[in-house]
Length: 489
Image (cartoon, rainbow, N blue to C red; front, side, top):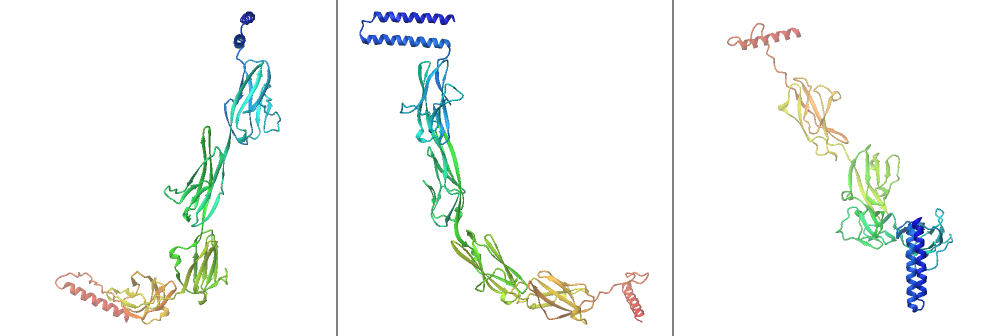
């Protein structure tokens, strides 16, 4: 309080001295008058500032948010508060002006830009932007009179338009055409557009970035896939990135593999069911038609064949009931870009003929087995021989009583379990998937006799004395003969 009293006395004294000086210099030229007045005003201002500083911080204006450069999204409402700070007692007036105009911003709340009193701050003026756009960008100034003092503060508004991407998410092109994958990025600042895709090859000259998309010269089916169109902004305080995923489909006519373009020959027989498969590469998916011997087939006919269609393929199950079911079958695949066909020939298969030769392997005959050598028939019935069937009976028996056994094609044919020193008849038939063919001519052969078994006499070794072995053998033979005669009598 003492300091304020002293300063007030100094102020009164200063004003009195200034008045005295003005009276003394009243006869000087007008230029000097102006100079004296300026000195007086400068003195008074400095003195007032000193008094204000003695009480606290000087009043001034501030913005909330406080940035001098404000970056805002287009179309997103916001406001900037102007408020006095420091020691002050009264705000006589406060208003806003746009750059290049002295006319205050409207206070009508319906206007896109207007000023309202901040409900949270009695001495504040809120500059409100309801729907900002590029036309509203620029410098804005807040004017105020606070405790009789005029003051201003300003900010620059930058309106940023977020990146927006355009272009269909799925785009179709015919194979071989020059395809423009459409994609653009808009915004402010203007975005840079970048492209990414699977297996990108910087050296592939078919790809060229255009203002409105990515151009592929002579697009092929291998170019199908996912493409990423990306818009990017990195300018000053604005950084933004948007991506747009595009699926590219390359359309082409149905096409079969090279080996499928040749007629496929198949063999069947009555009672056999054959599957015919037709699965071309095509986009879009093909529609299918089946023909038999030049005439279109219905999808179901008396159980003879059944057509099953799935996505991208078709299967026909043909059951051979009679001779009419053999012949030429054709699958025709069509889409909007063309057609292709695949042919099948179902031919009748037969059982094989007789083996070309069947021989007894004399050196491998035993008392209980006989080995056969068999040569495949020249007439296999169009299908490969897979096995041989062997039948055998004793010489005095009928074939109805024969025993039978099947041998794989590469396996040795050994008929075992036979009786020693017995005459048998044998015959062989070839077998393929259709069935068993005709039997070969009959072969007759006798198994070997069982070899004699040496039995020594009681109490005598076969090795006793000179000639002892021979005597023992002779005695054993006599004993066997006597026992045999006794059994038969």
